[in-house]
Amino acid sequence: MLFQFPPYFTYRDSNPRLPLESSRSDAGASIGVEFRHPSWVADGKQREATLGFIRDHGLYFVSIDAPEDKSIVPSFMDATGDIAYVRFHGRNRDAWFRKMRLRRSASSISTPSVNWPIKPRN
Image 1 (cartoon, rainbow, N blue to C red):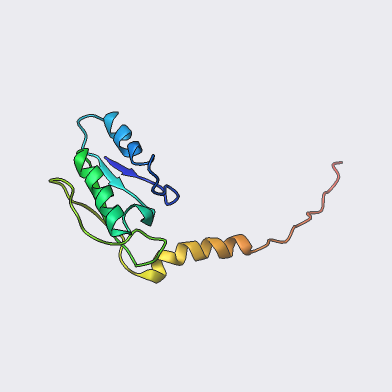
Image 2 (image 1 turned 180 degrees about the vertical axis):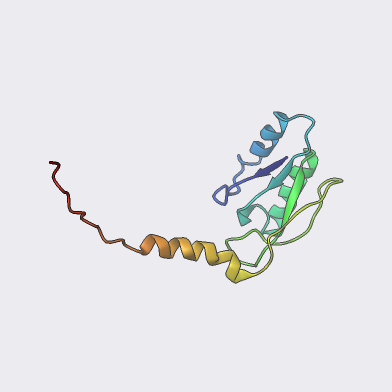
């Protein structure tokens, strides 16, 4: 089972309990944890703390293969148990950020208002 946390789920001292509490409710399942905010693993000391926490609680770290960017969790491979889980997104930077650029440009397009003529009923 994969617990994928959103990009706004940043590291705070209180947050590591959440994956542990989540895994307790699904006893017997293999639980993979994917953090999508770099604060969990970008810094070497924090990376070791995060991986140690995951390992100590019998969870599996989900590694990603992605382009380098300060907003993306860094790509590195590490197994915290007997299962390795890797998400191969690819490192094509243009494709990675294309969807965001398309969303921004679509939201900036203003559509003209259309006033349809209303015909009176006879």
